[in-house]
Image (cartoon, rainbow, N blue to C red; front, side, top):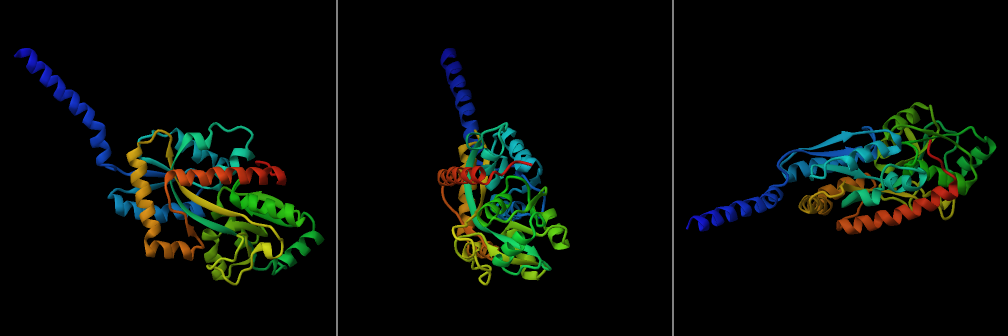
Length: 323
């Protein structure tokens, strides 16, 4: 009888131990979630994280706290997120630099595709070729003409080396024959401030972080970098209308450190997809020039693989270097 009692007690303890992970996952999340952004406040990555973070906070019943870790061409924030505990309470705002840096930087301390777990795609947006409001050229064709007549005079800002903002400009340089001096910043916010102030001449910034300034008249849009015109700026032509074949766009999503709980990834994926199906959220993203990219984590990572291959070719053909 005593042996049977010990066996039964031991079995009960074992069952309770086995049930603990399931219980821990079923009540996820039970504390705030940190969302790492590799740029300072003010740019598209930060804007999208705060917009989606607010939605997630309401849906999850826990705060989603944005943590900006800028520098190193986005690599500082990326590595911090990758090295964080894979417990489902650290997310990362995946952005084009993660695809570009795989080729742009000869040696990184991580392999992004292997070390980050995909969670969900959020949105794809065009970049906008934008100049100071007093810049002498008012069209892409006039910009090219001015640039060729004034070699090395144009300063091209970017949100950092290796960003889609940087590479969109490098692609334009290669395809138009206009030489511009690259001036990298630690994010789109400070770059935009200097563009408005006239310290730099042009930027190929993501539409969400630039569109309010364009509509407000503090800067002037010459062209969008997508293959078709954007409904958000219907009167702005594409760069390709002047430079045939030119196309570049940015895309964003969410990731977690590799090894994060499948239940956490599934929950966040479900809530982000719900946001992308919500009419009010879709309207906000459309007003920023964004097109939702819902789907599974695997579909998002397939997009990332394709973009990594695409940008590798652009980095190599343009000769772009990390600065």
